[in-house]
Length: 282
Image 1 (cartoon, one colour):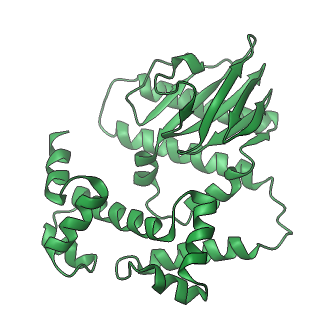
Image 2: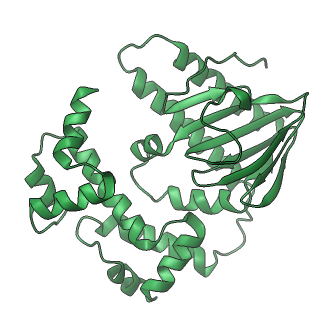
C-alpha cells in the first residue's frame, strides 16, 4: 500500500509527516511537546529516549507522549515510514475523561517500541492516508469533527495494538489498581473535591504515596491530575455552554467567582473571561 504524500501541517493540532526533517518543532535534543507516533516500514531509526537507547525497525511502531526527552536520533538512509503528531490540547478535547489516559500512559511508558503484524501496519497506513487527505482538503462544515473522529480512531487502534501485547492472564499489580481506582474516583468527584487527602483517604494510602505512584507513571502528582481535570472541565463549560462564569464557578464547587478566577488564572495564565473572549476571536 503506497502512502499518500503529506503536506506540511506544522501549525495543526494533528499533523502527518514522512520525514523527521519535515517536523519543524522537533530538533535534537528535544523535549516533546506533542504526542508522537513513529511507524517504520523499512530501514531503522535509533534514538536515545529518556537516557534509554531505542531502536525502531521494519514493522515497528514507537509511541512517545509529551514530556519525553530525546537527546540523540539517527535515521538510516533507506528509512521509509511516517510520523503522526497530536497536541496534548487536542487529546484533552477528544478524551476529557481520564479513564483512558492513565492506562494509556502505563502501557506506553516503559515499552514505547513494539513490533506489529502486517495487518496492523496496514490499518495504521490507512489511518495515515485518511488523516493526510483530510488535512489537505479545503475547510468545510464538520471538517474539525471529521479530523477529531480520525484522531479517536488512531488513538484507540494504537491502544488496542499495545493492549493486545499485554498478558491478560496476569493480575493487575497493586500500583495499576491504585491508579485505576484513583482515576475512577477523580471522574466521580472532581467537581466537588480538589484535595489530594480526600482521594488518598478513599484509597487507604497516604497523599505522598498516591502522588509518588502517579508521578512515576505520568510525570504529574495527584494534585496536578486533579487540577488538570478541573481546568479541563472549566474550559469545556466556557467553550461549549452559555453558562456565565458565576454559574460555572458554582458547578465546580468554588466558594465564589473570585476564587475560581484566581484558580483558573494561576493554572492557565488567563482569566476565565479572557479565555472565553479568546475563543470567540478564533
